[in-house]
Amino acid sequence: MPDLLQIGGITGDMRARLAERFTIHQMGDDYPADAITHIVTNGHDGVPAAVLEACQNAKVAASYGVGYDAIDTNACVARGMLVTHTPDVLNQEVATTAIMLMLTSFRNFLSDEAHARSGAWERDGNAPLSRSADGRRVGILGLGRIGQAIADKLKAFDADIHYHTRSPKDVPYTYHADLVDMARAVEVIICITPGGAATRHLINREVMEALGPDGTLINVSRGSVVDEAALVTALQDGKLGYAALDVFEQEPKIPDALKSMSNVVLLPHVGSGTHETRAAMGNLVVDNLLSHLDTGRVVTPVPECAHLNPS
Ligand code: NAP
Ligand code: 8YV
Image (cartoon, rainbow, N blue to C red; front, side, top):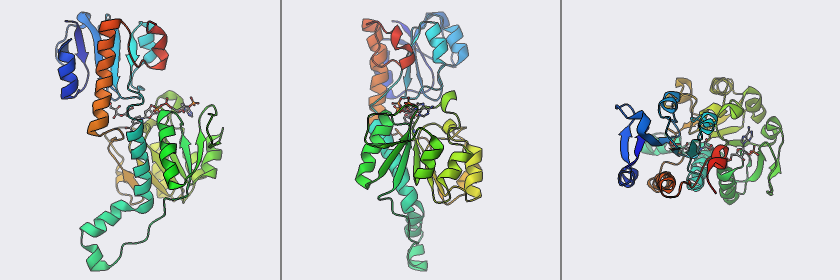
């Protein structure tokens, strides 16, 4: 059987399907680098340069996740190696996470829940009022597969939807060619672009200050999209009102300053983290690898190497 290098963890179901067709080697153990033809990895671990260098016969790296900023696709393309990811199967889950972050932030559910659970309701009386999440002006940074799903779900909350991308889309929402302009026009920004150098710190001090003291920043994209140090300062200085975050610059580290703020909601990168969606992602990873074994083609190549996929 061909040799597969496993980087990071995989689910039991993925392992069972892969073990029927591959000899699986775990990175960290001794593995026969020259024999490796396929790699399975994830959006956090990517494919380290040393692995690319060592596994000269690897033809496919299949990543568990849609974001692949941890993989040097240029280096993979230069070697003729296909990279696959898991688009679409997680759109609804990640969109739901974004909506839940918005609702939790606006409606103060975390402190309300603590108020109920701690006995403060009986002891001190009613919890403070919160902000309505209905009828808000919401700016989506990145209106791709997941961004569109977020927009669809926001309609249930009667949102006035704005967006910023590099080029306008054929959608009935208000386009802003300039991100600062969008920040001035909306009450909430939801970030859902890819990570990587091109989007690094798109949300900077100027954008946060344009969003303003009553504004809410939601990030379900990558931690790198937001200048985290500037975010802490903006929240501390009252230049930005609220933040609700699933992703961070140095995961799994979260700045202590954010942990201590009551106007911040924090999640440990669980945007797609349900049994159902992770199973669908795992199946697509395995489908890509098995399809390559059987046909030479993969199912969902990242755009940068789509031209390497035989027609
Ligand atoms: P997608 O379909 O490729 O959409 C990306 C969107 O971002 C497009 O609308 C694109 O439009 C826009 N964009 C790209 N670069 C930009 C830039 N420099 N400035 C402004 N807009 C830019 O991707 P997707 O499937 O929706 O996934 C988006 C990202 O979500 C993933 O890459 C991943 O990082 C993140 N994600 C996070 C979780 C989580 O657990 N929190 C789960 C899944 C995905 P233009 O090309 O027109 O600019
Ligand atoms: C995953 C994600 O948690 O798909 C993505 O881009 O960020 C998440 O769905 C992660 O990629 C798992 O490796």
